[in-house]
Length: 332
Length: 174
Image (cartoon, rainbow over all chains, first blue to last red; front, side, top):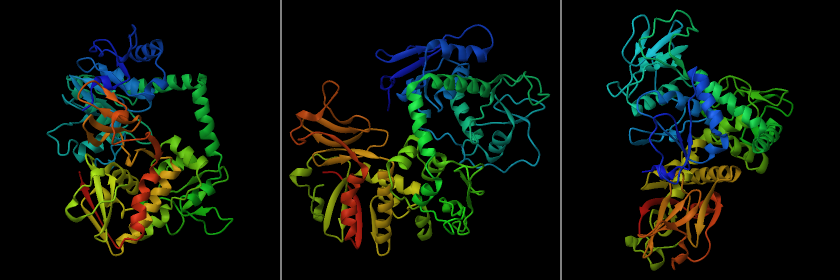
């Protein structure tokens, strides 16, 4: 089991427990005023950088649920879930998959669900669902549908710091699509929402996340290491996507044809024998069955091989090996 | 890799103290020892690539025979290509090689303490006194620890699979 001394960086906020000796500590001192700008302002004045999160980092959560706002901001800034220490326990959220796809739901609702609530006490006038050990598989299919498809979600977490963080991470995973969609942090006693952008529904954790992402991007514009990394990604993205498709085992019907076999045949009932992937003139490609939008070489390699952007850049720029994803499917 | 006899799984002196190993039995006779972390990495990559004939490596004991063996060879080739192309690595010191994922793996018990392989820092000796140290004091482990390509660690398995008709893989601790 890991201990706090295994971490290189501990992040504290108001009311957090002390960090152990020998671990670098950053204190986020919240300022007066609006909670969202106060949280991001505390990150700015603390001097945190994206590079800090290359080493193992942990958030030391204060008692109760109010550490969630800071945690949401840190997740946005780090671009991933970070571990947390709450109620004397290390919660290894960084090892969890961001995507809650494996939780089954009961299907997309027939009518658009503008507002919903997860957590108790249930409120009148809002569709409410619960999570927890009493639910089959932690999340019932009905609850998963509401959490996943509600356009706006109020989350009423338990009082315990540990349970509230666990609930947040689970809800965030269920709501995640191509990007995160954090819920509102609510008490359950807010008035019935009257509009999509009703400001009375609690603290918009998604706005906290977006502000933190914006701050990270501002930092990235100034850092040399970021530009080197971006340069390599750009270089890989400029490689002819047809070359990448061949290295993934894909082929086209003819040398001048733009229709290619999708290199993710396992996602197609017939292994995509009818070549549904279209290559566009802007060096991007899209399979209508697999992709919501056109993908460049880096994102295609990421999705097909399940690797990180750095690995995708290495795959494209530093290697000529063929990983034949199409041959694998034919014999499976 | 150490060669040992399957019968009785008696460990020769060179395998004394080894931890976390798996034994690969080829056609009931020839065998090699591979650290289980290497097999686990192979199985993980194979699962990701949809190479289902290599994924049983993680469910030991396992037996591959008949048409499974050539498919296993082909899947190992795919895994090797992926490992090379994405620069996957493990660690090697003397004849011990391991490829830990996120957590250190134990590879050997010695009179000086237990030797672990950390994914980031390589080999370390955790004695009963003090913190972790480099295993330079361990007489059984001469040489210098090196980070090596994962495909090199898979190579012994590929080598024996080339001529196998039946492959059996068991967990093995000396």
